[in-house]
Length: 456
Image (cartoon, rainbow, N blue to C red; front, top):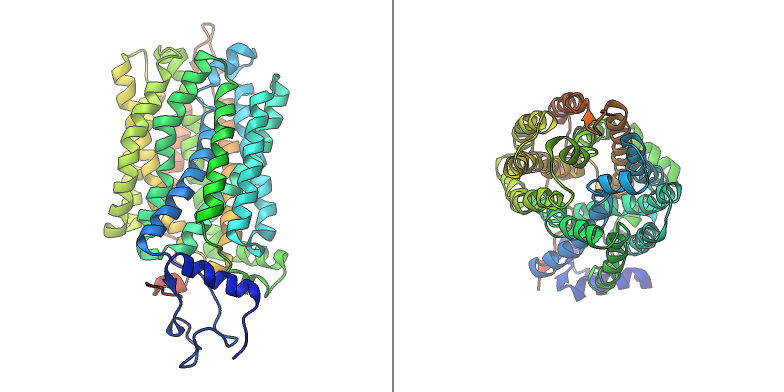
């Protein structure tokens, strides 16, 4: 029986640490009596028992919370940036798009090598780089330096988000992936409930620098928790050694199913970001809300979506991901029209419309991401999600640019042409419904998981 190298034994010990047992029957070519050994008996991935699986998902959700909050905190701070730095809506859109475009560029680069590293090691280094980029945003003083600092944060943050989804795809079987995606992606809701209102309060109470100082500090204990509790995930490395990184990325890009998934993600992202880029500016300038009332928009929407995203994830597992995605997408067209045509209304009315928009828009992403991760085999998932993240971030940058190019500023500093942004968003929503029908699960995803783990 061939002896395992030290790294392979380390992975086995990591699985045992999380109360998992690898059995010979889990590998199709293993001989009777083998526990570990033979060329065929390789570690592909380790599923955790329910308790530790939940803990790992919560840590991943915390990572996603930080990267999400760092991106979205810019949006409601728009009125402050425009006042303090003396910039217009188009210049503010560049602050938003710089993060996204940098994330897209590094996502393409990461697609070349991300599958060559242990998922845990990659996550720790990327998240540490993201924390440094966020702290840079806290100390800059000028508009050009802020754009550059946002690019640094985006360069690490975008790939980190993609890696989180890759880890979920590796450790959670397809049958329960919708619920797992709902939990991890509910970090957007938590960011809206706790992060955005607190960040806006800090910005109003002190300055716009304060939220970035706090967020950079929060990253440190999360890095420590990830180091201690996330297991080593190296099963994909068996396949990573079989081809050159460029050949692997090329294999990802030429797969028709992957191409359809990337186009789908681009339209999915543009549909939301075109509206959200200038929604806070519109709420203040046109609807009549104050900077002090803006946190209620995100607090109310976040409280509702933290429940709705988890419920939608379970619903998608039961009723079918495509069906649920279609229903949520059609539903989203109504609040898009309402928000982009909203006039001066009481705070309660603005809260109702914006909350409905957040529920429907976030509700599309849960089944969409579950379908996306199922289109690729485990050995390509890290590279696929990196390229997908690049597509998503480029789409965010394009959407922010489109929104900034369409809207204008009236004589009373009001936002003009926002209803045209709504029509662009609705077109993308309907295009997503059509494209989603062409997403097909990868061959192995259609059957049982490749490795089963028996809880001890």
